[in-house]
Image 1: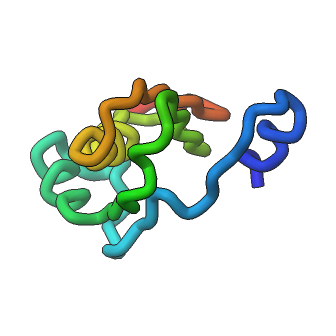
Image 2: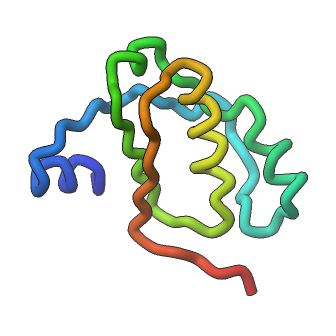
Image 3: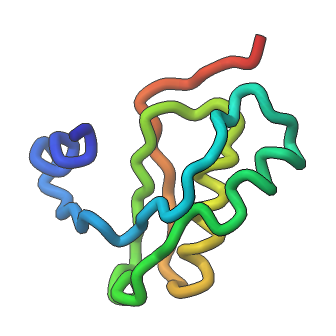
Amino acid sequence: CFGRQLSEKTGIPMARGLVRRVKNTEPLKQLGYVERKKNLDGAFQVLDSIVKYDHILIVDDIYTTGSTAESIGHEIAKKSTGRVYVLCSCIGQES
C-alpha cells in the first residue's frame, strides 16, 4: 500500500480505515462534472474518531478531476476541523 510505505519512509503515522468507500461507483473519467458529483454522493463514510487529528492527508493513486478527493474532503469536514491535504502518486489528463 502506497500510504503505508509513505508512512514508513517519512515517519508520519498512518491511521488506516478512517475513510471507507461504502458505495460502488462508476468510473469517473467518462462522466461530466455533475454526473461525477451524483456518482460520488454518499460513496464515502468517515469515522467519528477522525476528530482527534489536526492534520489529515488523503492519499490517492490518481488525480484526474479531483472529484474523489473533493468528496472525501467534504465528508471529513463534516466531522473534523483539522487541515486536510491531498497527495496523489500520478495525475491523469482527460483526452
